Figure 1 (cartoon, helix red, strand yellow):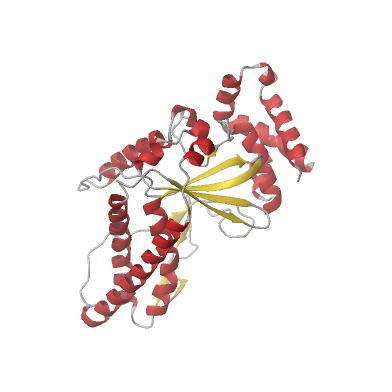
Figure 2: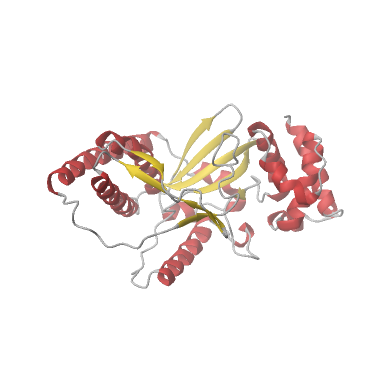
Length: 345
């Protein structure tokens, strides 16, 4: 769909949300866009569906209609949505949950946002796990998802610390590595799909030809390795120069850019309102990241092989480790977008 059509639809949607929108100063317009949510967002989405695809449905049906769009149409809708809720020069929309009454405008830099999220996570862990000792701050243990305009084109983006990116790469390979070491499959357990008051049970059982306990031990040690490796890499990169590395991936119906940040100083140098400009000022060549990635992949695969051999030689599956049994209940609609190719980002 052409950019002009998307821009025209967004203009009509904003006027439907606030008839005086285009008479307001830019700062007030941005405040409205940043606070776009709930019923106001549904009202905007209804206009966008009408203007982009000729779909006219009651407001209460809008959410379900949006979920059923094709990937190409959903990308066009997300582009138009971005023009109704994005902030800053690059029309950023952070696809993350925020506390009520908070928007991206409350944070000047990426560091401001990430550090507050770190404080929240620390408090949450202390409340959930009384023995939790806390952890020093290091940037972005987990990636953030962003939407923005780059050269007037709609992009999805992932924001990662360098340490987090490297650990994500080895985790992406780990299933295949572990499968080769201990072949296994997952089958439905006896409670799979059983209805509960607030959803249904998710119950899968693993079969590994008698090596189920060995597999469990290997996965547990692997998880510990990735946690430890993230911490080691985060410390390693603390004193490196502030830098942003960019990695593009273009597919048939969408464009994606990964932004990789070396350390805390990098996040402190990047303002949400001037994101791309600030990134460009400290952008570095991706080859450094590729070299580090190859090193980490080699190291991690070797560690897994050595650990697997140690488990096969020395692990006693008859020793039962005490652990809390968990029951996973999936709420209706929670898996929407994860089960097919037309899912939203």
